[in-house]
Length: 370
Image (tube, rainbow, N blue to C red):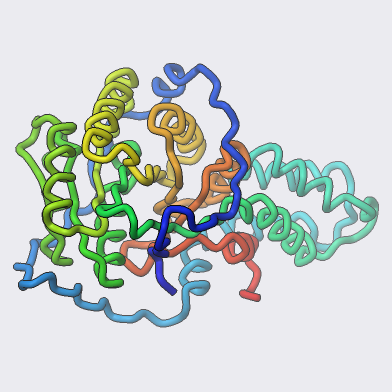
């Protein structure tokens, strides 16, 4: 199935999404809670020379099992933490106040959020109080309630052929996997036959610039970059002009994510957007927020800040394989209603896949695929 779903005109009907709730005015406090720059974990391999013209990226070796198998494996830390505790709590025990409190504690520890935890506890207790309950039934209730919250935000990523280049602004804190995600999205788009360009507008980090240049070399995508410390908005302007002249289908614009100075972040993103609009009044056509699941509740604060300062249109959550608190995606979806386009559960390009609410819910509950 295509990752990048093309819309052939701007009037193509889309499913109505509920608008995100208003963000409260306490962004400064949230920014102070978020840690400063985190260096990229892995260094990308040296770039291979890109053949001309516009080569297709080499296919990666296919791994065993389908996407649900990889999703279940990636969410295994979260799933084991939740389901192991559920089995321990409910095996040969009658449902009472203590077991329900234990269940709520487990759900909160998984970062599912208080509203979701309370909803699941109510559903489990309904008509079952003072009776034995099968742990598998609790898991099914968990999956059902999680799916109900996630289904409305399960939104496939799409772009319009009428907007060329389709300009995607990618935001997120340093260390969230933002630049790597851009590279993976670019690889997927190239594999589907689209002409891709990267703009390395995180000009404060030499590693981010180098990483995009490496990805560009690997997949045959042009990279617009400048020396470290160059003006990011000027680079964005030049990249759009080059993308137009070059017939680029999709332009990904990387950005800095230094939240220790929230006002500077706001000013920089605002300047980049204003410069982009000088080239295309409708752009950016998408603003993608990349969040690192391993940051837990910190990801909630990041979602609030970037929703406020960048006009986020969609979310990609990475590193779900590295945490036992994958429930944070549920808490963010419930509070902010941000469309979720994709999730990542590993290092490979194929580990970034379109978001499937039901599959995620069943995997985190330790259930088999339907």
